[in-house]
Length: 181
Image 1 (cartoon, one colour):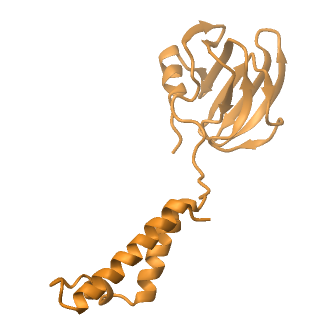
Image 2 (cartoon, rainbow, N blue to C red):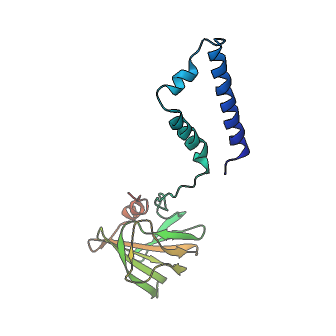
Image 3 (cartoon, rainbow, N blue to C red):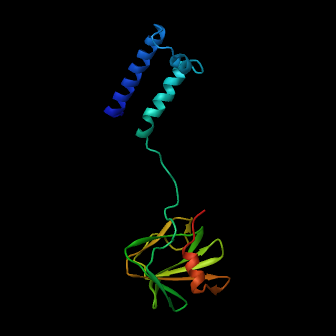
C-alpha cells in the first residue's frame, strides 16, 4: 500500500504536469517540457516507470548473502592450547562454515567437552570445542556460511589441520579472518 506522503507527491506531480501543459498550450510558458517528456516514450510507458519508482520502496526483496562477515569468529584474545588455540569470546555467537565441507565428528572429548570437526573441501580439518549447541548432525554436508554450532561460553577451542599439520598461531589467525567468496 502506498503511503499518504507518496500519494500526495504523486498528486502534486500530476497537477504540476497538467498546469505546465496548459501554460505551454496557451504560450504563457515558452518551454517544451511536456513534449520533451512525452515524445521519446508513450504515456503508458512513462506511467509504468513512474509507478515502478513510486512503489519501489514498498516491495520486500529477498536477499541471499553470506551470514558472517570477517572475522569468521569474533574474539577478544587468542592463546595456544594443546594442538590448537583457545579464543576468548564475549557473547553467544553462531559459528559459520568457512567453506563447503562435511561434518566428520560431533561429540564430547575430555579436553574440549562438546566438540565438532569439519572436513572442508579445501583439505583443511577444523575442530571446534567448548560448544554449547550443535546445529548440524554428523556426516552432514555444510556450505560456506551455514551455521553449524553455537558457542555460548567465554571460551572457544579451535584447531585447524592442513595437509596433516596443525596451523601455527599466525596461520590460525589468518584462517579465522577468512571471507566467503
